[in-house]
Amino acid sequence: MSLTISHRCQSIAPSLTLKIDANAKEMKARGLDVVSFGAGEPDFPTPAHIREAAKEAIDMGLTRYTPAAGTKELRKAICEKLRVENDMTYSYGDIIVSNGAKHSLFTLMQAILDPGDEVLIPTPCWISYPEMVRMAGGVPVYVPSTEENNFIPTNRDIASRVTRRTKAIIITSPSNPNGSVWSREQLEFVAELAITHPFYVISDEIYEKLIYDGQKHLSIANLGEEIKAQTFIVNGVSKSYAMTGWRIGYVAGPRNVIKAMTNYQSHASSNANSIAQYAALKAISGDQSCVNEMVAEFERRRNAMCERINSIEGVSCKKPQGAFYIMLNIKELLGRSYNGRVLEGSMDFAELLLAEKQVALVPGVAFEAEGYCRLSYASSMENIMKGLDRIEEFIQGLE
Image (cartoon, rainbow, N blue to C red; front, side, top):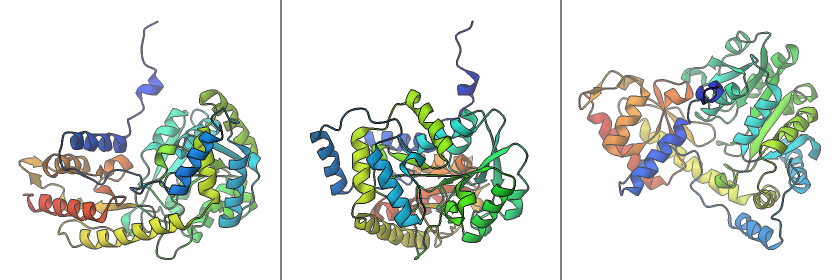
């Protein structure tokens, strides 16, 4: 037998967002003044009471294995959070805690997908969704949208891609990479479609608390018991509490699938970090004023950033409703050149901008959104304005 890498692993593309972030950090380490719009993590420190909880966990000796699905205390706290904030009833047996929401999604795909099963993925989409589907043997089926429709597919486009092999649809609201929020009417259509065919709904709600303009988050599972029985709510503490490195995510959903996920996770990774679980418990059940303060600052940055972008000739953006990302429309710039290199797509724009002006952003091609680039406003206002000034300088240098 030849000593080769599996075909399954060879077919998986690396995360372009992590690659760009790593390149920017490497340039910074060389002493270059890099402004990065690439990172998908809050720039705020983890709130003090959460950090203190981690220290308390160590002093209490909470440094051993926990149940594979997570501590009962944390899962009960998640249930209480879902009851109070989302008006939904779950018991702790309906919850699994994993090493971040990304790990939660991976294990969920492994639990529900067989080879050939199809998963509907509205685009633009987070870069890891299609790869996770492929890693489980499934087939990603893209459902395209337009900026005019707020980057949310029409009902007709969603329905037209449902087949007998459709196993699930992924809904991300608020969305990465575009900050869109699905309306009640749009969620109701998907819920009815999922019930009548039927298929699962994977509702990625990791940006749930990062929502602006007085809007309130609505989970599709909140629309009735039938759709709740077919929905997996994926969430975590990374974005809302600036805990990206702590790696705590969770899934709430049908108990039989949660049990299968727990069995799988027990062999794949055992349990999530015990100290981080205790800190997450304090984050979820503690004072939420820290979240409100971060949201207010994100909204301030969003407003200033959108105003500045739309003042630059050749680019534009729509104001996102949630998360901390903006989709920069660069379609008018394609075909122009910089120092003899033609901008044929978003990758050229991103590579040249980083090399020439030391500004890092993510090309839209990574999200199935050619003609756009994603910018994160999880950065200081000073850095945001400095980066946008450099982007304008770069555009002015195009021929």
